[in-house]
Structures are given as structure tokens and as C-alpha cells.
Image (cartoon, rainbow, N blue to C red; front, side):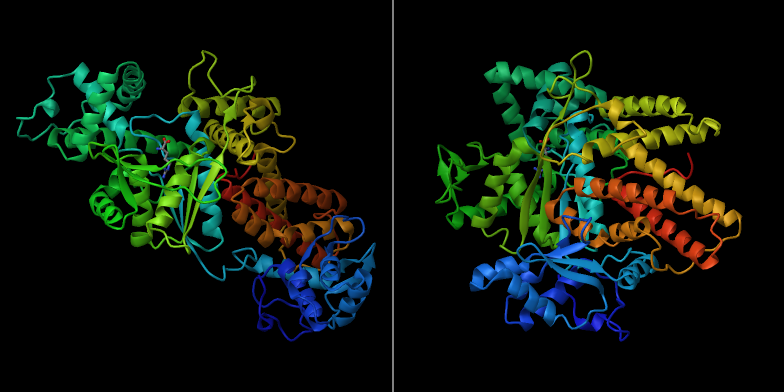
Length: 607
Ligand code: ARG
């Protein structure tokens, strides 16, 4: 992203007037220089140096320009450096090897960015040039299910992406997209009828009103569901009955609709409690059923436009493309009885999100086993003109949580671990860790318990998010809860230390002041890390990868520790220097707390 010069003040063009990325400012300056010598400004891109011992940043554009022009790269690099008129931002510009430009910044240029960051509630992160309306579709449990470990990653990754896009300044909706309209509901209906045939919901002559109270609890539903799924698998007649019930529900049979409402409300209440305890919050509780009113018209239009066609009584949308390496089967739009499927409601949901919410990016945080489903839905949405090219549709896929045996995580008894039990497990582990490390032991029991919960969730979330989402990872409670190494608890502890430094300073009546140029390499290193924030967030968003944030947060705390060991803040006799350091600590703390919050991790005030 390049910024207009008007962002710059008159004082030698050194001081950013508005939050901006230092890297993009450097790239702009180099881009101008390449352009001035008649070359493509795009090769002016500046990147952090691969040899931090030699330089802070580098530009490798001369190599690319040499290929394009047939000139020698060193000669190009020299010409470009000659074309950089404003030298104020640089302490040193040199050419290395075949034609790399090594860049070392002037301290007052660097510190100008640090001060803008400190003064800005958004920590120097610029607003997007083109704000998007982003839908993050995550969580996605089916009706009837208490949440379990299989729902963990969607919830944690989706929540983090939602917070990241929102912080970057986009309009964001987190939507749960509950599975509440397809076959699972039909299956639950026939299961309840089998168990309890006398309920009025099954009596077609019953004229209502139906009971207000649900005939089932979430525990009942969770137990009924796997039972009926297994039976339908073994017994084609049962499977047929479930399909029929699904169809009748979709035709609004009153008893089924009333039952559906009970199932739905019971499920949402239970699931909401689980998501709450994870710190996961949805803006929308849309489900597959939400778009039910759109299905008829959508299907009719697809038929009319020749996008959908009949095949053995069913309706399908062919989605093959000329250069497919493997066959992509057609999307099934309706079964031969006319009932809608998972793909049908997903397609109509794309339409609803664009029409009703103005979505420009829809991100589906769903495990990688559903990649074919999304490929079909996206292709059909394009083909049908439901989603124009300007709307991004993307499956943000993720891998599984494995046990030590490398297979999907199970309880000791071989069952699926419920989310509630998982949270209890990490909280227990955090509690013992705190006791072992003698942390927070003298605090009131209530506070200690709250800290244990916060540390346990931090361990869980950081352990998950620090892996690239597409890889599977091993759930290693011991490692995740450690106060050392790349873990959530380590970073929480780091933030608590910073808070206590600032508290100490306040108690001594010391005030923070404006941030001065660094006195040593440790302080400079910390500042260089801080000013990368806008680019780090942009990269995490572009890659939909929270592990970019975990990595940066860990490095930031490491740099802070080195800075803190090298400089004795509270005993410093130069009061301006001391005030500057206090502001720097405050800025690191705010940055760290923000990063952790983007990961869904809370920070205790003391530990
Ligand atoms: N309910 C689905 C399942 O349990 C996940 C929903 C994901 N979101 C979507 N738009 N299809 O597999």
C-alpha cells in the first residue's frame, strides 16, 4: 500500500502525520527512486533484512530490474541510491553482494513512528483504503450437538480472524451458520417419534397449541443423534423415513415445525453457554433454516437460467471447469423428492449475505474435509451469478487436533471429549502449574480461580493458533500450559510483568513522557519490532493465519525482555530518559494486550 505525500509534515518529510506502516513508507521512497531512473516502481519494495546483523531492512529490486533490462544489478542499485534525494530517514544505505541494498534507519525517523504508535488508540495501524464487509462463518455446529473437541478449531480460529478483520477497520459479522435444516433434523424427529410416539407433534390431526416446554434437553439430543445416525446407516428404511421427515419439515408440517423450534432453542441455549465459556461471540445466529424462504425462488431461477438441470429426478448444477485436474462432481441442488440439502442452503446463504449484509468477503472457517463441498458451492455461486467476481468466497480450511498417538484426539475411554470437559481439563492443568510455579498463590481464592481459567484458556488457544491452521497438531497439555517457551501463559506472564513495572512507577510518582531515540541495540531492536505491527497484522489477515500473530507476540516479548535486562528503568537518574522508557513499556504492553485479544486471550491484571 502506498501513501500520498500529503501524509508527511514539513520537517524534512520525517514525521508521519497519520498512522502508516514504516515498511510502506520505505517502499514508497524506493519506488520513487526506481521510477526516477526509468524503472518499474514495483521493485522498490522494501523488506525486513534477512541478515539483521548487517542491516535492518533491504531492497532486492535491482536484481529484478536487471533481468528486465539486461543491465548490471550493481549499476542499477547505484543509480537508485543516487536518486534517493531525501536522506534524512537513513543512517546508512549500502550495496552488498550482487546488488542488494542494505538499509539502516536513522534513529529519529524510527522513533517518529514509535511516537505516532504510542499516541494512537489503533497503535499506528492505518484504516484500510477500501474497507470490506467480511462475513466470518465459523463454529457451525449442527443442531443437537453439545460442543466437543471437533468444534474447537473452527471456534478459536474463526474468532481470531473475526477480531483481526474488525481491528483492521473492516465491517465484520461473525456468523455461526448452524446446521438446523437438513437431514440431521429429520433424523432427530424420527428418533423422538420412535421413543415417544404419543407426543402431539406426530399426530397429524392435532390442532394445537403445542406444548411450550421442550420434550428434550440438549443431553437427550446429543444422545439421540449418534444413535439414529447409526441406525440410518444400517437400515435403508430408517434412512428413508428420516429423509421423508426432513422433506415434511421443509414443507412446514406444523408438528415438525413446532418440534424443530424446541430442538433449535434447546441447542442454541446449550451451545451459546459453551461458546461463552470459550470467549467466542457471534454477531449473527443464522442457520441453514434462515434462508428457507429464499430456496424456492433461487431454485426456480437456476432452472430458468439453465444453470440447474434434472438428473434422475434430482436437480443438479454441473460445476466442472475445463482445466480440472480431477473430476469435480455436480452440486446436488434438490433430492428427487424436492428437499433441500446442505449445498442448497449454503448457496442461498451466499445470496442472503450479499443481498442483506452487503458482504464483499465471505470466509468459511471449516475443517479441510469439506473442501470439495465449498469448491462446488463457490463454483455454483459464480455460475449462477449469485456471487459476482468482486465478492471473495474462501474456504479457510484447518486440520485436526490429534492425541499423542497422532490420531484425532479422544478421551482415555476412546470417546469424543466434550468442550466443557476440555475446558475443565486445561483449567485444572493451569491451576497445578500456578501452584508449582508459586504464582498467584497468596491471592483471594476467587481471583486465583479466575486466573487459572484465563491461563488455561490461553494455553488452549495459543497452543492451537500457534500452528499454521492447515496442519494437524498434537494436543500437548504439558507444553501448552508451561510458563516458558512459546506458550499463551508465557505471554500472559510477560504482560503481567509489564503491568507491574508501570504500577511500581506510578506508586513512585513517575510519569511517562515522549519517547526518545534509543540508547542501545536492545532498545532499538524493540522499537524496530514494534513498528512492524501494521505489516504483521496485514499479513496475518491476507493469509488468514493467526499463527503470524502468535509468532510476532512471542518475538515482541523476547525483545522486551532483552530491552528490560539492558536498561534499568526504575533506577534511571535521567528523568526524561526514564519517562521515555515508561512510555515504551506502556506501548509494548498495549501492543501485546491487543495481540492477545486478537487471539481471544485475556490478560490477568496481576499474577
Ligand atoms: N454444520 C456444518 C458441519 O457440522 C458446518 C457448517 C460450516 N459452514 C457452512 N457455511 N457450511 O459440518
